[in-house]
Length: 366
Image (cartoon, rainbow, N blue to C red; front, side):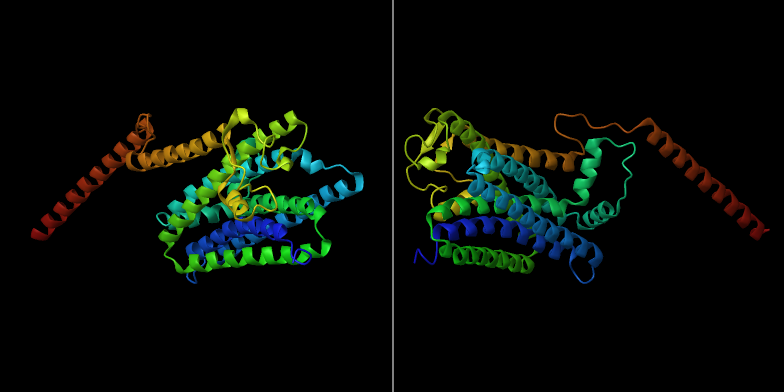
């Protein structure tokens, strides 16, 4: 069995593919339900659909190119470039993906309430052509992100997960027969894609508001795990430098973690060993680790605290018209003057109309 089907490789491909397909299927189902109907803007739907698939394709291409370069360098020069900075790569990509998912989640929950306004906003973002003159770098970057929002999330997700899968397979494959890898890779990708397709079909048949709530809650669980895992990766990188090697390669026992920063540690359920099995899937989706640190636990709780505060503030703003702890904006003098002038003009027009009417009635009576 081991000579034909490498189980660790299967779990690696399955867990990395699963996270990608879940996020992509949620985006596709969201687009289909919100603007993909026959009576809706098909041109805008096709543009956004192209953004998603272009992000997926470009992410796959870049991760294969970079992963191939890392593996080629490892075998050709005997230097594991990626392995020395693996935790930094994963931490940075995880942090970026967490921020993007969090921002997108706020928009997803508001779509059903502001569907028409949202469609117009996306259409305007797609059609904007800014010269960039008079705009700062931050403004130009914000405009670009708005225009290609549906490209960024699948691109970052596929790039991060794909690169991780390529390197993990390269590392695990060193001790496995070469012929045992292809079937495991294909099966892992197929199972992940099938689950993603099921989520897409379920999303299409569910009421939009219910689908948005469930999918957004799930995406926030993923984002919280990514944020916590990113902090854990940065701490693990510091520990690996301190010990002079890759601490993850030492297994689950002593030396694999910094006991000074440890909140809990169990010698089983390690998502980093032999593909991780089911624990690897929990790690990929929710940030599970068998060796939690103060940083990873605190960051996980701080993430949810920030999300709660953000949604509470948004709810307060919608009800009151201003942000918490800030005074309501007073109506400007210009607006007040315009309103008073308009009111005076309306009253004068009504008065003139009344005079004309009375004169007309007098003429008729005469």
